[in-house]
Length: 160
Image (cartoon, rainbow, N blue to C red; front, top):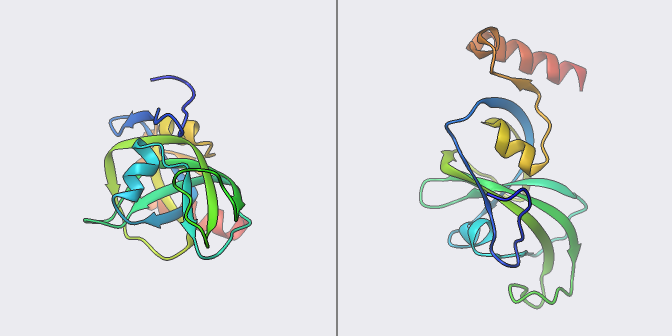
């Protein structure tokens, strides 16, 4: 596993879920299969969408089928109407993606339309490779309880 990945060549970092986790506030995008897997594993560097976005940064990729799960993280670096990528389709906005990081096995989660926000527990290594900053780390015993997590979420929401 290299430190860098290249979506154009299909190189992807893979992070197993058997690692320490932390709570992250993330932006997510639900994508149909097989395209979600192509983004993470197949070098798909453009997501074709009818609307543009001003968001730039880490984007959790959620596969809508078969059961709905997080398959990895990419960086959304631009949104243009005229990408030269083989994945670009005419008449759409081309969301330019790079640096895919896979999560194996995937994390089950429900999806939504467009870019949406969620608070989810992710492996720390995956999040670091994906450019995320934790809200809280669950490496310590006092942070693992459901009560502590609820207090933390309430504190974070009140301070934002």
